[in-house]
Length: 94
Image (cartoon, rainbow, N blue to C red; front, side):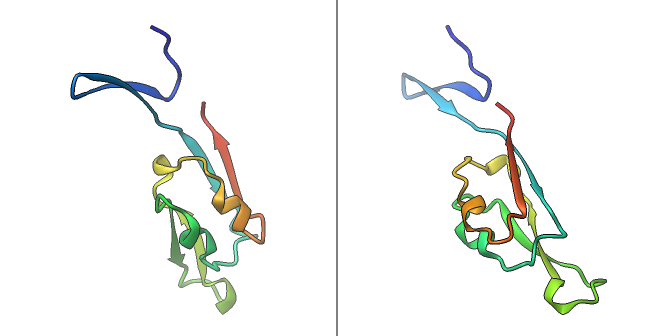
């Protein structure tokens, strides 16, 4: 049997099915992120959320995007495409 990193064999109703589970490391540059929430809206797996930074003096920078569930990332890269500030970096761990 050939094994791949990020692939797991699971028996489902007498069928041997291979399920691909991508793994990604997600980094958000807080200096670039303006907290617009576009990545939150576009992500099909709810990887992102907006976090309020109460200590921030500039009201335009009060919210920042954070990756709350990076393990859910399916590497569709929708967040990279929609981020107008290029604040999101995704590294595949394959």
